[in-house]
Image 1 (cartoon, rainbow, N blue to C red):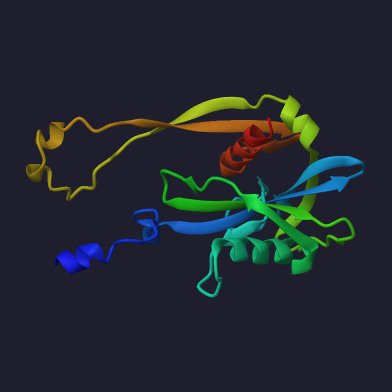
Image 2 (image 1 turned 90 degrees about the vertical axis):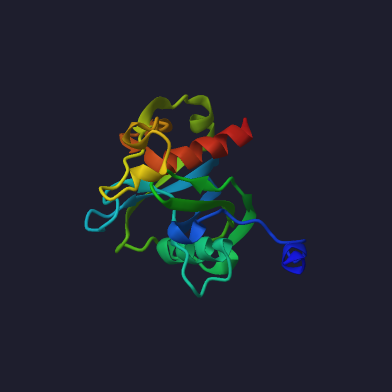
Length: 202
């Protein structure tokens, strides 16, 4: 047994329970557009099953064949923006986003090279938003909160815990951010990642 314990030396830590989460990866693509440093966001098409019509970063699910979260983010970005791998220069990672509803997102900042030709995939992307970073850095987002509550399942074994059904479960809150640009509302997980990115630039 002690040998098994010692074998943990040098083990790389992971996020506990990550295999039970929907794991995805996104890029925060930045580029010079019309003389300004901008971040690219997508307006999703109306017929998509998930988040139709909303504003998001390019990215998607981490597939089994992806060598890493970064590879997944770049693969999805190239598919959605019609880019080649060499059109993107990897800059660095942002903090991993762990949500209370079983979604895990790995965000990465990438710079779109100057001569890259962007051809968005019309099956997923209705339009692209080139939002100036100067505007975002000068704009305070609208903020709010969502309550997060633990609700045990119908067959929960209350008899095994102190207090049974009267156990004082902890409640939590989840911060929400909203950015408005030219009539478009950037909110949800996208705005949370964007707010984190902007905080690192201030």
